Amino acid sequence: MRAFPGLPARICWLGYGERARFALEMNRMVATGELQAPIVIGRDHLDCGSVASPYRETEALRDHSDAIADWPILNALLNTAAGASWVSFHNGGGVGIGYSLHAGQVTVADGTPRSAASIERVMTCDPGLGVLRHADAGYDEALRFADRRG
Image (cartoon, rainbow, N blue to C red):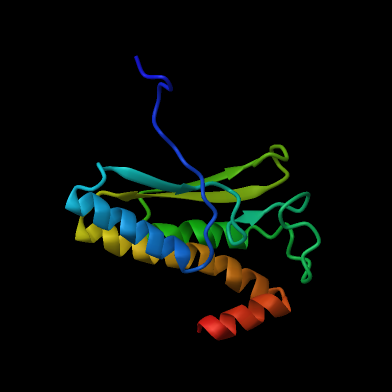
């Protein structure tokens, strides 16, 4: 009997660029047999470019875009176009139905070159939209970061 039945899962917080590098390394390890496939890399509604939640995550944004649904919709569309394995769009996200909109994504690392291409695109554009959102709202730190990263 297994001590902890179910699928193993881990959480880690990574910055812009780190997500893509880490996910590509996992995909490489699956390709070489160091890890067993598939590895599911997910992100729920806790990303700054994927949420419109005026009572929590996006409360009091500088440009007053707290509740504008365009950002999570754009996030879902970008992740779909980038090749995410599963994209979700939902409302509620911990604050109750009708009070927020969120997009989530899951990308599978199966060791193939196709998976690597999708991983690189999704893990770059997904967090990148958060940088763009905050730069668009006029936050100096996001503007400087976007300038540094091109």
